[in-house]
Image (cartoon, rainbow, N blue to C red; front, side, top):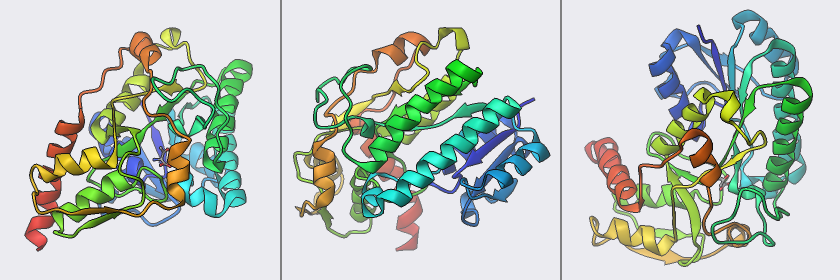
Length: 316
Ligand code: AKB
């Protein structure tokens, strides 16, 4: 029987993974944790307050629940990280090392997300390969790249069963992201539904890899359930679904909301986006554990608008 800990369960991905894992393994077997009180959507199940940098508390919870799997999702993202680089580095690295130590000392299987932020301005931008020049320029990207190497190190030297994906920008309706460069692609939907115009902080032609949340959750669970013998990447797998620009997602929304207006005021986040790939080659993930996305931009836009209408229109 599995006992699962989610660290950062109130965050954008944490919320969705908690709900899905509770569906699969039973509510009582999935312990949500976060530094903040639980969001309403994950309240109907076990919850523990946890600061991921507090190793003693993590050990105490592991001894109490005997976790077989830990999903460590807490992190400072790209844009917020640039505002306080040292803090972002300390939090992202120390929390990962704490969790990897739990894997080493207690045998828990570990999931840790990496990101397209591991790539930088010297990286080939189109169909970015699994193995290529990296050289990230943001503290978030540097921490993710260093984290990937630590994952590989703990796998190789201590036999920790750690698995990881390099997520593109993630788009879902159940919770909002915070502090990322790709956040515009969620914000824009909320504005459209609220009958407001949207001032985008990226240029209209800023092409970035993106993914609908259901695909991200499925990929994560598929990777965690994959036969360990088949996994050839123990740092982090490239993962892709679609790529689009702000202008493209605006056009997809405008098909259903013809009066929706957008303006563009690029800020420091444009420079971050300029260093990231346009598109990702995820053939290794497809080969090793049969990864295949289900959502393209049209389906993503239709699904987001449908769900946000259900949530927001009755509140108008
Ligand atoms: C961010 O924009 O920082 C994140 C990411 C791509 O990892 N969404």
